[in-house]
Length: 369
Image 1: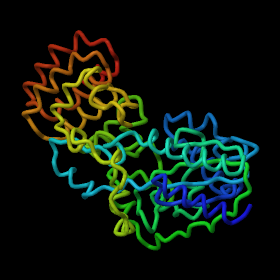
Image 2 (image 1 turned 90 degrees about the horizontal axis):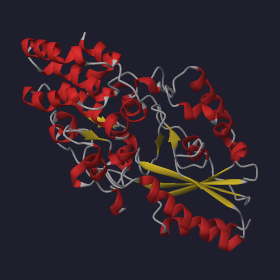
Image 3 (image 1 turned 180 degrees about the vertical axis):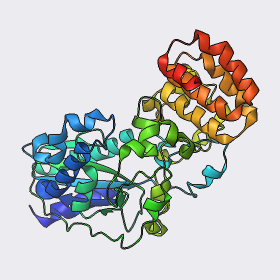
């Protein structure tokens, strides 16, 4: 394939709003596939069964599409304009991960990927498939193989130009394109990302146990969050940026240029008490067009109530108490736990006497005990 096509491809990617691009060989992630297998075998994926369901396709890009000859990885910067960890000191406010405060990146990145892919098809007549996060693709190892960055000790991608703040999309193509040199690990002896984790989710550098990760617990996990991990969640109600934000390579990052990725005012440190009052319709309206909506109201309220329980604010008791009769057992159970921390012993005992006899869900009953 002429070099001019690769050069033109990079120009098209920049015009489409991507900050970085690299090209990888589909066979370049064999070692990452073995690490992924070990991750699954250890049970570190928790209840994300969809990871195991199509494991072979994740391990081998050609198992996903046998005709693929090259994989184009594109990165879009979503860097924050301020310190994303400053909200953690505001206990009455909710911390939503930077990537989820604006419009849903899946829609934006995929739209831009399709724009680049259409150009490539028009120029060469090749076949393409476009993927953003939801397909069985090992994006981070592929991005490393394409030279966009490297997987740091926190297992996330790190770039010398964008730090930790990159959305990654991929274009699988039947073209044989010149590949880029793989990214080189530049973590050195640094372990800030490992040490900052509130729940000790890293059993070793470059390994993560999702079952202890706050991002997993607040987004992917469907049931009650384990009691021993609830206090460490603090006021994080959707995701966690701690290990990303402390990376020294962020000093080279810049704020997102895409307006759609800028935080919506309503999602920038919202008041926890206000969020606790959301019914399903209000939740859908507030988070329409964002990644938060995918989690659903009940799981989101679970997180909010845990954050209220960690706030130490006795003034929040009425808001939490109203949730003892919520239609979701998940929310009711977390309300019991939060009240055990916020209400006086006498008031909690009175609530228990009033509500426990009528409670039918065994999980919620267990929270009262």
